[in-house]
Length: 186
Image (cartoon, rainbow, N blue to C red; front, side, top):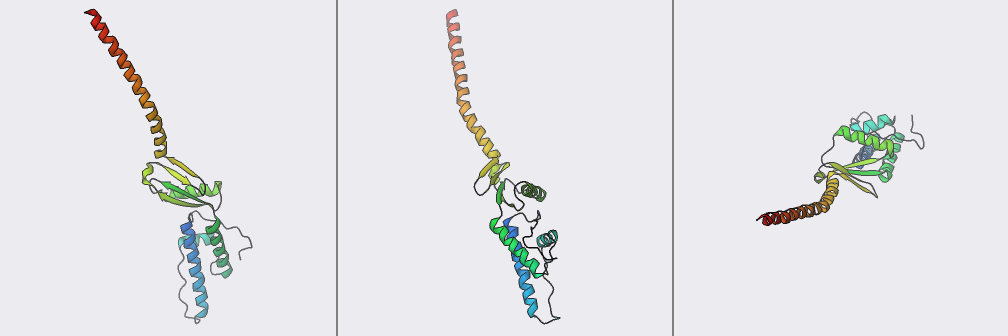
C-alpha cells in the first residue's frame, strides 16, 4: 500500500519533541543512503539491513508504512521535515524530571486538545520548587510555587507593617494607660 497524496500521518506519543523528530529524520536519511548503496553492490553480497530504532518502527507501524518501499520512505521524510519546520511547539520547565508515563499523558492531552502534531520540549528548573513554567512562541505562563509564593510574599510584606503598627499602637495605649492608673493610685 503506497502512501496516498496528502496522507495524514499519525504521530505516536513516543515522538514528543523536536529532538526525536530530528533523530527520525537522520534515521530515515541513513536508511535511504543504505538502500541506494545496496543497489550498487553485487547481488548476494548485501550486508544486513540497519536496525531501526523503536521510535522509527513505531512511527512506521502506526502509519502502516513499509520502509523498504522508496515512496514510503520519501513520504515519511517529507512529513518529518514539515513537522520540524511548522509544528506547534511548547516548552515546559519542571522542578524535577517528569516520569515517562506523565510525559506520555501530557503529550496525549496536548495532541488531543491543542493540535495533533504538538511537539513538547521539557526542561528542568530546580528553582521552581513545585509546578511548572509553560512557554509557547508568544506566551509564558508561570504556574510555579515560586511565582505563587512570590505573590503571597508581596501581600505579606504589605500586610506585616500594618499589623506591626496596630500591635505597636495597642501596646502604646496599654502602656500609656497602665502607668497613669498606677501613678493615680499613689
